[in-house]
Length: 153
Image 1 (tube, rainbow, N blue to C red):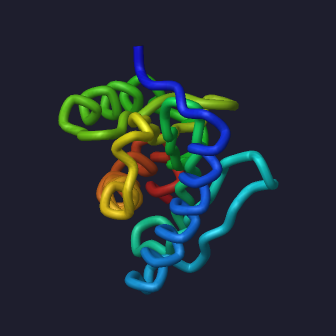
Image 2 (spheres, rainbow, N blue to C red):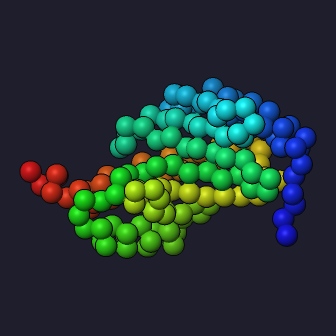
């Protein structure tokens, strides 16, 4: 079983994650905002301006054992749902550290999770950069699958 971190450990890690996220923001012009949830919530978001998708926001949630992260990719498809979901499942085969999933209202998300004992500034940078790069890479093709008739006008 993975290690369970106590309140003091989580509070220190929360301070570190906040500091690391602001340091990452200073390095990359693409990051337009870094913010934190309510006190004690252990939740952050990193909002980035994209080329293919106007904005990508990565949410991070610290638990007692893991750091979960996710980004909203697109709404539920209006058409070609089977083709879109098959496309995403096939893409999951090559992704590292994240996977496509169906969330609330059948929207498409990109999610991942890792043990908090491995979290440091470099790992946060990798997570944020990976989700951003995946979304930028696949967004044009999957939006055209799920909303094909809007592009055929």
